[in-house]
Picture 1 (cartoon, one colour):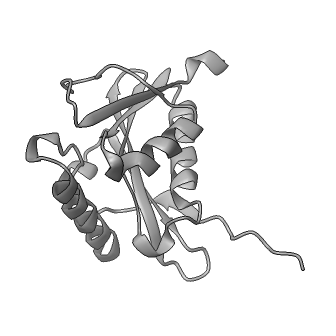
Picture 2 (cartoon, rainbow, N blue to C red; picture 1 turned 120 degrees about the vertical axis):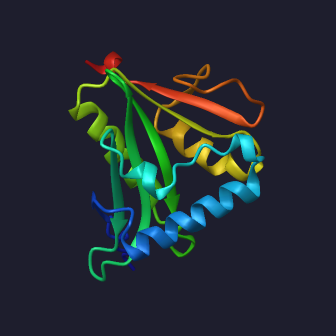
Picture 3 (tube, rainbow, N blue to C red; picture 1 turned 45 degrees about the vertical axis):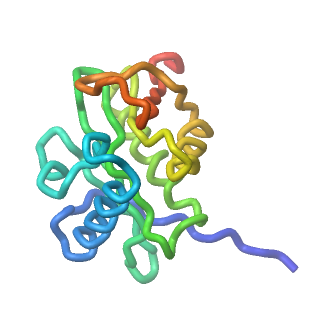
Length: 165
């Protein structure tokens, strides 16, 4: 018996204010606030995700158009991007959605000529799968970047894009 791999999601720019996306982002923020102390939540809200320096994308089931996940790339300095608001719908987890979103966002950073792309995620067990995903994609732990302060609740990671050029 031959098995066919699951189809990759369709990833494209989206509006974080659209009803299904807004609902998923609301769930994301609720989870972040439930799993982290108030000063340690760095997820962007819908208004921040519409800022001009942020590119927001969604992953959808190509056939039905169902929302599978979201993510964003923010330019935080010339040549430096930050992955923000990565979240996969609970029903779509363990299907490669997060990996596809991450690859798409890193590809955008490469296309823009960024030298590196960084991210902040939690340091406790709730975020272990996210840290593993980022490490598999080549991200390495780093010092806090941009306006972040050191925190035991945060893990900072970066991917050097210039090394491959």
